[in-house]
View 1 (spheres, helix red, strand yellow):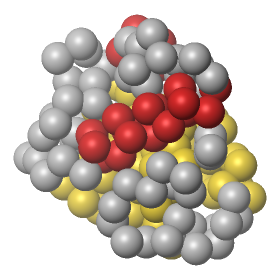
View 2 (cartoon, rainbow, N blue to C red):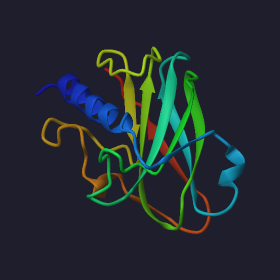
View 3 (cartoon, rainbow, N blue to C red):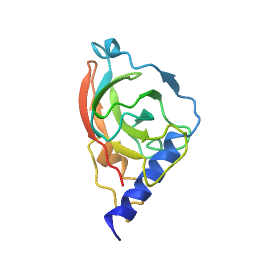
View 4 (cartoon, rainbow, N blue to C red):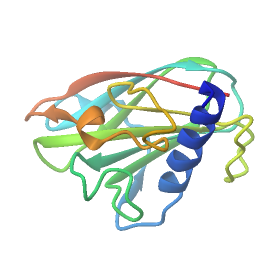
Length: 157
C-alpha cells in the first residue's frame, strides 16, 4: 500500500479520535502551566500553513485509552502558525501518556484527507497494517512531577 493511502488512514483515525466529545476538558495554551508539576511541553514542527486550527489532545498511555472515543484528558486548540509551535498540556498526575495533534487546515471541523495533517508523540510511522493507529506502546511516554518536553513532526498528504 502506498505511503499516501497509509497517511490518509492515519489522519482519518486521528481526526475521528480528536473530534470525540468526552469527559476531558478544553483549555487554553498557557505556557506558564508547564513551568512545574506534571505537564508536557509539546514542540510541534512542520505546520504547513497559518490557517485553521491546531488541536492537541492528551490521553493516558494505555491500550484502553489511547485514541479511544471519549477518553481524551485535555484538549488545547489554537490558531495554526506555519512552521513551529509550542503547546503546553497540563496533566493530572505523574504517569504514562500519549499526545495526538491535528491540523484542521481550513478550520471547518471536518476531516479533509487531502489537506489536514496530524502527528503523535514519539512520531511513530503509520501504515496500512496498523490502520493509522499506532500501538499505545509506540506513542507512550512517561511524565514525572515536573514538565517533560516532547517533539512532534506533522505529517500531511
